[in-house]
Amino acid sequence: MADRKCYKTFNRSSELAVKISGASQGELFANSGFALFDIMTQIDKVEDNEHVTLEVEGTDRDDLMVNWMRELLYLYQGSSFLLKEVVVQEVKDTYIRGEVRGEKFDPDRHEMQREIRAVSPQQGRMEKTGNQWTAQVILEL
Image (cartoon, rainbow, N blue to C red):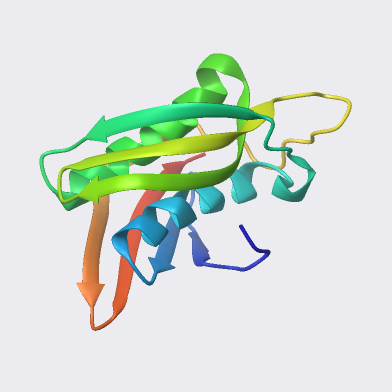
């Protein structure tokens, strides 16, 4: 992934609203992973020497985006995995399969900038406007 800001953040008291964009559904999901881990750590210091395949389902697009980001956050919380890149292999309105590339957290090389407790199911949405896909998610700090 290139060094680009494919997302914007908006601070709230104990939450952070994140608006993510992409030219396709696949790029939107890849950018959502980038945004989450770019907020949490210095993503440019993460290497992509480990690969994990993820399959996530949702009841609709909005639910799928929230579930996807929850699964990515769980990779960090459950196994200290830091994401560097996402390669989306298949995406539909209620299903995504992709390969997450990154490495385990190393306190000698990685610094956590912001702890994210959870991805809120409230106010999560995903939509297509013209040629652009956008999503908004709320991260609990």
